[in-house]
Length: 257
Image (tube, rainbow, N blue to C red; front, side, top):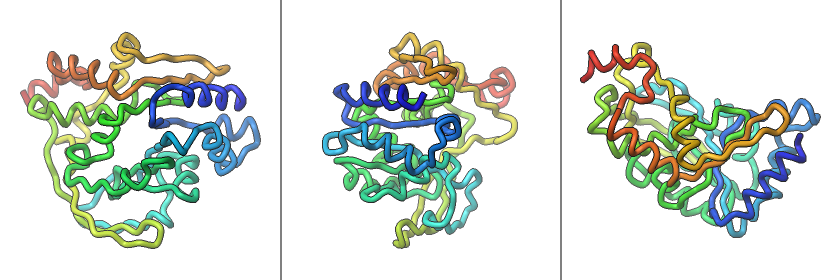
């Protein structure tokens, strides 16, 4: 199974896309092949031409963000998996700066990416905007291929249609690779974390029609789609139905529309 995964990544590496973003749950590959996260991360990196391309992975830490925060990335485990934790430790890995919405990158554009300093975490000069401009390719491994955080960028651009979110500014500081940074960021939170229930799985069929490709490696599902394919598909949906990805649609519509 691990050989099939690496061959799939090699095939994707041969495409014209200059940046690859991986979302996934890799525990089955680690357990079934007796691999450490560090070894698997090194195997994946070896399949990507980092002199010409970039590999990005999310490094999200805090699920709930206090109004004033301090986070030491060098000592805190991320919520997005042990593989992501090892990527940020690799030599030459750069990262964006954010209390929660952090991404790490290996490759030719690492310095450019790490220089991004957005005020709005999903807006101008954000990692998500960068992914749109660079037309990156997303790979999902062992997760629903519709669950890609890039969709929040499209929502941000069409925020005039999304009444169930509000802007909140947070400030604090982080430590990353022994350097301390002060931050002020604006997040776009749901107005109710319990009464607004997201269901982004609804995007699976539209994404399949819009260019998403999937295949099975034994019982593991692999998906691949580009940022522009996601953008054009979800943009059309949002214009018609801004509550398409909300499970309790009628309740939210009644309260906020």
